[in-house]
Length: 246
Image (cartoon, rainbow, N blue to C red; front, side, top):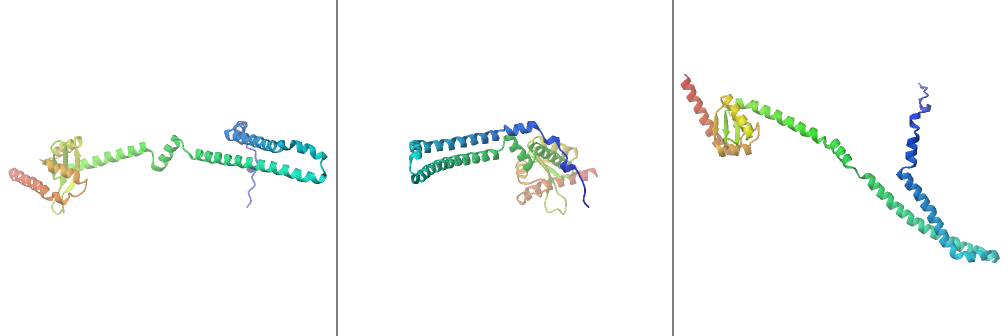
């Protein structure tokens, strides 16, 4: 069903802007095109003058020349004018082509602001990404610290490194629940003490475990023996405490 509407033919005065028209009229591109038009007129006039001026005496004498000689003389002058104009227009066209190519490359270049905006669109805002990384790191550390009370033992350096391991019967290998250096290692030790988790000092093993195992991963096979000795020691210590408590 057709719909009648006067909107397409309704004048929109917002589109009629004298200021916008003035800007277009005296824009850099318009001024360049105006200059090129003036240059073309000047070049063509110069070419005609250069071609015709040497023949001025000959042209003046045409009125007294036989009719049969007028056409060849006119053709000769016309050919000279045509060649001169064609040569100059070719040079002008080559120069204009070089200018348009340069302008195109200039338009393709982006400002520093445009480069930053494009990077933000493609890769995301670096500030927001850094904030998100910080939030993820904080959440990961909170989750890691929440696992420390479940550890079987914390192996320390004793002050610079701390690695919390968990092992229960039936597990294929001990699991790393938390690890840290310096201030984070201190927090792990303090949390372990508060949860009555045994802390064992073994400098080379603590450093090796910190470098070779990630959170929530099983320890590498090359550390099985050393870790088994530590966990065995902790287990025997617990058994002694239980027997004393009885």
